[in-house]
Image (cartoon, rainbow, N blue to C red; front, side, top):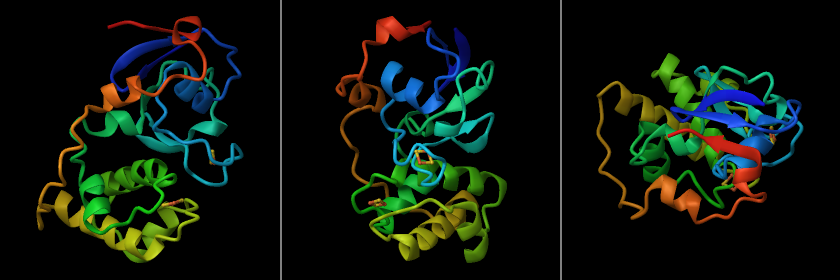
Length: 186
Ligand code: FES
Ligand code: FES
C-alpha cells in the first residue's frame, strides 16, 4: 500500500507499488482531470504538483509518491478561480482541452515561483504538447495570469460551471471500482 495526501486528503492506494501515479489517480481515485496522453513522459498532459513541483505523473510510481503532497487539477482551486484558469478562459487558450489540465498545473507552478515570466521562460517551463496549437494564446494567458497574481490586473470572472469539481468527478465512473483499490479517510 502507498499512502500520500491528494488534494489535502489522506489517501491510501492498495495497489502494486510500481503503479504509475497517473493510473492510480485516474483509475482508483477517480481523479480523471489529469489526462493520459503518451504515458512516456513526452506530452505533459499528466502534470500534477508533487510537494509543489510540477511533475509528470506517468513517470512517478505510487511508491515514489509515498508520503508526498499531491495536487491535481481538481484541487488547484475549488471555484476554478486560480489566475491561470481565469486567464486561460479569458484568452481563449483552450480548444479541445485535452492538454489543458497539465498545462494549467505547469503554469500554476511557474506563476508561483515567477509571476513575471518572459515568453522564453514560459516556453522553457511549459514544453507540454498541444495538438490543437494554442501556443501563442497560451503565452498571452500565462503572462496575463502573472499580472493577475501580481495584482496588476483583474479578470472578470468566467461564468460558474454550475457544478463542483468533486461532483463533476463523481459523475465520471472510475475505470476500476474505487473500493477495491482505494480507501479514503475523510
Ligand atoms: S501522459 Fe505523462 S507525459 Fe504524456
Ligand atoms: S487544446 Fe487540444 S490538445 Fe491542447
